[in-house]
Image 1 (cartoon, rainbow, N blue to C red):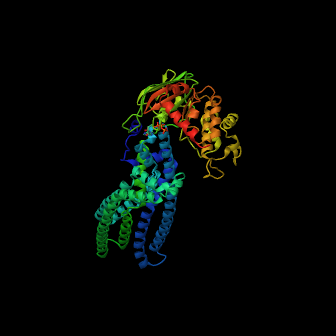
Image 2: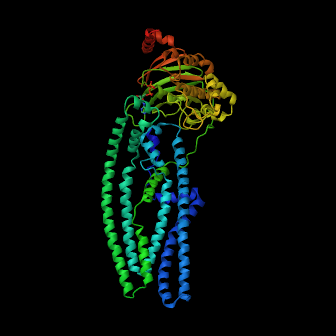
Image 3: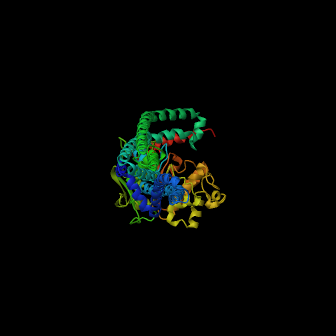
Length: 611
Ligand SMILES: Nc1ncnc2c1ncn2[C@@H]1O[C@H](COP(=O)(O)OP(=O)(O)OP(=O)(O)O)[C@@H](O)[C@H]1O
C-alpha cells in the first residue's frame, strides 16, 4: 500500500558521514575509538618522517663538516632512529587501522541491516513488500547494486581518508613552516581540486549506477537462466539467448548516461594533471631558488619536497571514495527506516474472546498503485466451525479476500470483523495469531523440517507429540523418519546433509504447519489450493479426513477442484470481486447458475477422459 511507503521519510543525503560516525561510536564505542586513534597515528607518522628527514639533511650538512662522534653526528643518529621507528609505526598502524576499520564496517553494516530487516517486517500488513518503490529502497539500504557496497563500507573508506587528511594537513603545515604563503596556496589549490575530483568521480560512477530499481530488473534478466526453477524452462524453450539480449540491451540503456559521465570525468582528470604539474613545478622552482639564494636550508628544501609529495596523495579519487559514496547512500537509506521497530514474536496479546462469526461488511480493496478495485463490496458471514469453499475464475479475487480475512492487508473500504471486533492496525497482530494458512505460494524455509512445521505455533515448538501427530495427519511421518537426520534434516540440498523435497512433500509440510497451528488454538484455517501438488490419493485422503483434522475450526478453502469443493458445508462463488452465489453444493446445483455450469464442465471432462 502506498501508505506503507510514505511512512518512510526520504533519505537524508546531507551529513550522512557524521551521522554514520556517530552511529559507529554508539554501536561499537571501543572499536570506533581504536580505529579513530589508529587513523590519526597512521596519518601523523608520515608527517613525523618528513620532519625527521628535513632535520637529518640539515644535521648531515653540519656533521659532514664536524666529523663522526661529534654532537652534530649524534644528533643525526637520533634522527635516523626516529625515522626508522616512524617507518615501522606507519606500517603497523596502517595495517591495524585497515583490519579494525573493516571490522567496524562489518559491525555497522550488520547493525543497520538488522534495523532495516526489523523495520521491513514490522508492519502487520504486507502490501509494502509488493511495491517496487519500497523494494528499491530496501535494496539500496542493503547496498545492493552493480557495485555491492553496504553502509559499513563508508565507515571503512572514511577511516582511510581520515588518515590521508591528517597527513595532508600535517604536510601543508610543514610546507607553511618553510614558506607560509606557498603552503597555504598549495593546500587551498589541492583541496579545491580534490573536492571537485571526488565529486566528479562520484557522479560519474555512483549517481548513475546506483539506480537500484532499474538494476534489479537488469540483474533479474541476467540471473533468470541460472535460477533454479526457471533454468528448466529456459532450456526447454531455448530462452538463454533471449535473456542475454534483453540483459545486454537494458544494461546498455542504463549505462549510456554512466559512460557519458565517465568520458567527462576522464577529460577533467587530464585538466587536473596539467594544473597539478604546473603547481608542483612552481613550488619546486621557488623552493630551489630560496635554497640557492640562502633563504632556506637544504633540509627545508627536502622537507618541502616531501610535504608536496604527501599532498599529491590528495589528488586521487579511488575505491575509498566509492566506498564513501555508495556506502553513505546505503546508510542514508538505512537511517530512513524507523529505529524503534522491534521483531514481532508469537506472543502478542491473545484475541479477547472465541470468535462466533467472521464477517466481511461491504469489503473493498485496491492494490497499491492499481487503478481499479479488486473487491467491490463483499458481504459475507462465516459462523465458527463452518467449512466454506470459495470458487471463481482466475483473477476473481479469491486470494485477495483470503489475505484480507487473515488481516494481511488493510481494506480500502468496509471491514473484516472477528466476532464483534473490527480487525484494524491496533489488533491486527493478535488476530493474525488466530489464523493459519496454506497459501498457494506457502513458505519453503530452508531450515530443518522440525522448524518448518513448528513455525505453525512457535511458542509450542517443544510439543514433540503434537509435531508427530500433525506430520502423521499430513501423511509426512514416514518421509520425515526416512530423512538422513530425521526431524533435524535441513530442507535444502544447498546445505550439508540437507535434502530437497518434492512439490507434494513441501505442500504436506505446509499443511502440517497449519495443522500444528490449529492444534495450538488458531481459530481460522485458510487453504488456497492446498492440494494443488498432491497426488490424487493424497488429495482424497486430505479431504476425507478434513473435518476430523480441522476439528471445530472455521475453514476457508479456495479451490478449483469441484470434487473437493462439494465436500464443504457451504460454497460462495466470486466473480470480478463480487459474491454472485452463496449456498450448499446442492443449493447451487439446483439454482443452475455459474457454479452449476463450472461444476458440469469439470465433471464432463472427467467423464470424457479415456479410462
Ligand atoms: N500483489 C498484487 N498487486 C497488484 N495486483 C494484484 C496483486 N495480487 C493480485 N492482484 C490482482 O488482483 C486480482 C485478483 O487476484 P487474486 O489473486 O485475488 O485472484 P484469484 O481469484 O485468487 O485468482 P487465481 O484463481 O488465479 O488464484 C487479479 O486481477 C490480480 O492481477
